[in-house]
Every structure is written in structure tokens, then in C-alpha cells.
Length: 338
Ligand SMILES: NC(=O)c1ccc[n+]([C@@H]2O[C@H](COP(=O)([O-])OP(=O)(O)OC[C@H]3O[C@@H](n4cnc5c(N)ncnc54)[C@H](OP(=O)(O)O)[C@@H]3O)[C@@H](O)[C@H]2O)c1
Image (tube, rainbow, N blue to C red; front, side):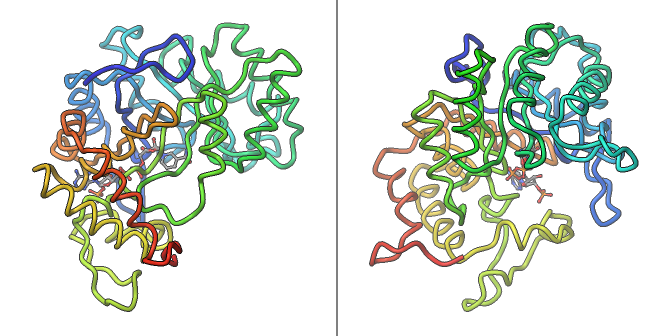
């Protein structure tokens, strides 16, 4: 894998980031990735040249399990070889009235636990996982700025939120001379049904790196799901053991008429360039021109990881890229319904 500048920071990261959301996670009673599988996946990613690893304090059951798995793996590695992220916002301790959100109290409580579980004294990148309606953004930004000053965090990032919220946070940082968000993490993939264009326009204008999450729509864009009913985009046959077979969120988040149309075009391009739909879907993101785009790949097996990492060696032309982009619209230029 090649390395790219992380937006306008001085740090270089592999052109794909590895996401650890499913480490230690139980969905409908199923433990998705245990510690030994997690280490195998991290080894495969590092062997392929990957240095960029995404986590969050609430990944895994109980919370923090994903960070702990990374920490036990990192213990046998050179910490400086990796760019490690985590996030704060979601409820970590439901009993504690200050156990969630972006207050100074919760941020300061969370960072030390995150560092301890990861077995490190600094994070490369700390994201706010969501926008907190209850806490003034100035309080959040000043708490994060302080973490950078203390050397606990190198860079700041922002995950899903409205474009105006991202812009407001940047404006408040600039006005108060706080560290600003350098990296964003939206849900963004070729078939995404909601409008993220405004948010991405902010990223382009403000030189922020974009690290899309769920870049394969939870596996939908690999082409492994079969449509069951031409009149119902939500009706699908899911392979045994796949995320769509046991995770209720799959249908809600990832299945749409637009998704199927886009997948048809991705399949056509994949045939033309002798690659897989997963690789073309990732390439479509990596080739975004308006901003540095570093997809956060998920993988449950080393085979999936190897396939996804090989997207780094796939090329698609601008014409093929645009065909995938245009597949989101019908003949009259309207977006396909959800
Ligand atoms: N900021 C946020 O709010 C947020 C939210 C979600 C995720 N994230 C981050 O983004 C990362 C990636 O998200 P994601 O897991 O949803 O990504 P994704 O790439 O859209 O989906 C990954 C899943 O698709 C299937 N898959 C992946 N590659 C495949 C292949 N080559 N062939 C067949 N199946 C394949 C696997 O599931 P099965 O084999 O089980 O079907 C895998 O677990 C997370 O780990 C996390 O770090 C962040």
C-alpha cells in the first residue's frame, strides 16, 4: 500500500485505514471477532503495509474491548509505526449522569481509559463520534485543545454530523485559536442514500481528510447479497453468517433502490478491469478528487481483508468512476428513491 498525507497534517497514513468496530462485538448473541481473530486481522493489515487503525471507546462488548484487543496486539509492536485513532461521545457508563457526550468531564474521564486500554500514552487522532446538542461546542473544543497541549492526542477529528455543525466547530476553533478538526469520518459510499454532499463540500473547502466509514455498505457493495423481489429493495437473500443475516441494522442502513442500481454499475466496471465489486467500490472512494479520501475498511476474515487491501492495486478510469457516480440518478437526473 502507498501512503498519503492525512489531509493538511504532516502525518502520512496508508491509503486504507482498518476499522475495528466488530472486535469483541456481540450482535444478536453472536461474538463477531474474538481477540485471536482480531490479532490475525491486524497482522494481515500491517503485513500489507497498513499503519492506520480506527477504534472507539464504545467498540466491543463490554465497551473498550476493541481498544483492549488493539492494545494487546500493539504490545508486541513498535507503537511509533502506527497511527491509532479512537472516539468519544456515546454512553460509556449508563449509570453515570456524566457517562456520555462531549462535556469536559466526560472527555477527560474517557481519554485516560482509552490510552490505558491501548497501552499507549498518546493517540494519533481523537474523533468526536457525534455532535452533542447539550454541550456548548466551545467547551468541547477547549477540552480537546487541552488534550493536544498535554501530548495525549496529536490531531482532532469529527465523525458524523451536519455540515453546518462541522463548519461551526471549525469557525469556533479558528476564532479561539484552538486546534481544529483535521479529519472527518462520515458514512459515505457509492450507494449512500442520504445527502452528504454539503458535509463533503466543507471537507473539500477546508482541506480536511475524509475517512469514510462502512465504505462497502456493511458488505452490500461486495455483491454477495441477492435481490429477492424486484419491487422491494429491502428484500434480500443474505449468505449464511454474513452481517445481513443477523444484524437488524443492515436492512435499515444499507439497502435501497439506489444501492442496487449503483451496484449494477460497480459490477460492470469490476468486470471491465478484472477486479471485484468490493475493490471497485473502494477505488471509487480512494479516487475522490476534491479531498484526500481514506476509506476505513471492515473485514471479518483475512480473506476479505486481503481482497479489500488489493483495491490499492486496482485502477479505474475517470469515465468508469463517473459512470458509478451517475448510476445514482435516473434518466431524468433525479436520485433514485431510498
Ligand atoms: N464513525 C462512526 O460512527 C462509524 C460507524 C460505523 C463504522 N465505523 C468505522 O468504519 C469501519 C468499517 O465499517 P464497516 O465494518 O461497516 O465497513 P464495511 O466495509 O462497509 O463492511 C464490512 C463488512 O462487510 C463484509 N465484507 C467486507 N469485505 C468483504 C469482502 N471482501 N467480501 C465479502 N464480505 C466483505 C464483512 O461482513 P460479513 O462477512 O459479516 O458479512 C465486513 O465485516 C468500522 O470498523 C469502524 O472503524 C465508524
